[in-house]
Image 1: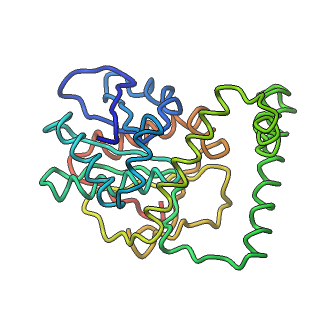
Image 2 (image 1 turned 180 degrees about the vertical axis):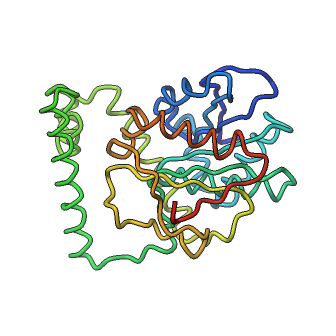
Image 3 (image 1 turned 45 degrees about the horizontal axis):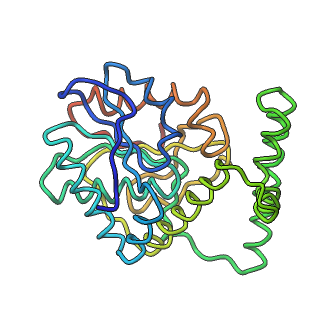
Length: 272
């Protein structure tokens, strides 16, 4: 197998299972919010050896591999599958595979997840400008965090990707930066595998969340595929940071009310 499962919180053998995809450290605080209401686990590609194997696999094969592990580990359990960015697409594909295998449709939670097949490629100049506008917005957000005392100066420097490249060139990158490099490689690999995948209508419930990385008019291109025009569930924080701040309490309560306490699938209404 190219995937591994680890438990981030414990619980009984009958509680629902919230399956987070990759980057397990991001979800430890979220796991605390489901105490007694669900077991939180993480399904992840653990190392470069497994990533190398996955590079020879299609998106369908990658999802089949993950779904078979989930089905074996949690037979008969209510499932919610959650992913950030491209891992949200992986979560949806795994859920589709579990439905095809005969299981009840899991709930799916996607955070900042674009339907990549629907996103048109921008001309080089437009793409370059958009990248720098996004970087400018992120730097402004991070500097605001520094001014408010939420992060220190060292953390502010580490969050600068250009400085990180300099650190690596000088061979002074710490372990955290090396781990981050693996995560980036994994994300690019998964994005490439699912870039042209057309998602169809899904039988189960879907929730979309948006961090402060994206503006109010972003709809992630899911309308036609999943009957969702845009997410109005906004999380404070910039992309992955939204999973460690105050927004996780909000996310946990919404997941609980929409999936864990519902006897029927929940479909997000764009007007909500």
